Length: 380
Image (cartoon, rainbow, N blue to C red; front, side, top):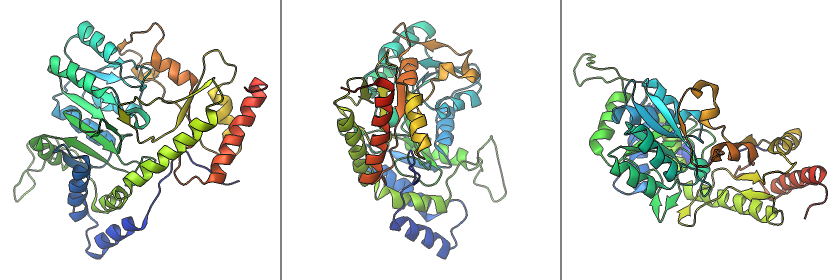
């Protein structure tokens, strides 16, 4: 049986040209023309007079964002609860304390009401980290307003949301810092890599310095502070330059997949696709579905049925406050039952590879519907 992936890389011809040029000019070492141009091209796409530093991963970008916000041992950082652990781990690199904030149901992202409660309960943190989950922007204007009132920097984890926007403003540009990921399964990829964004050019220059081992501009190797080996390589950046040319094409195809699922599930009132607020454009990085409370049908039963047919799916991110490594960290919610827990328990990430053919989608939907029929009896 043909393997169908959750979201695998889609490579075009232009990437090969940029990488070939790097080999032909012997720019295979870290840094080089592709890195410089990738930063400029990404910043130009994002607009808002943003500056960019190309790095080895989105996690590296998050770590530097924490550093540049002044996060130190014993500080608190308010962090979205429903996310991948890479959002929270860099807080702990700095020996700071994550305070996890529950989600709201309109976007599945950080709840501004819960964030306000966290400010009132724990006081002023060193930073706030909001995430644009599965490509859908958080309520960033509301979150940003709260951060400004408390004079706290906002880090926007846009790892999953390049190409998304709120009222025409691109994701990644709302915070004091934004971060992107180019991991293999993202909307565009460099095989591995990330980017730190800011409207403050000095801060991006500082990030580039820190990410190249904090080497001083001396003839010999001079270091006055601890640095990191976080810069993107010229080869990897070449892949990114080619991918960026096809970003909006990828968004269109992801959107079409989401709409295909939405239409297929429209007759079933016990299934709901991941929501997108009216003022947002999502890149629909992953199409997700939740099963209504109280149903016998489970996400696991759907996942196992797909797995049996060599089709990859995935659970919703397990909330950070449920992770054993973070069990001692504070968690702030508004509803009696945590929204993040509810989404995790009822949700599933569906196959969202833009290379899926009509036949592939027919096969996926046929398996899902057959499984629902077996578990629920006659469907409405």
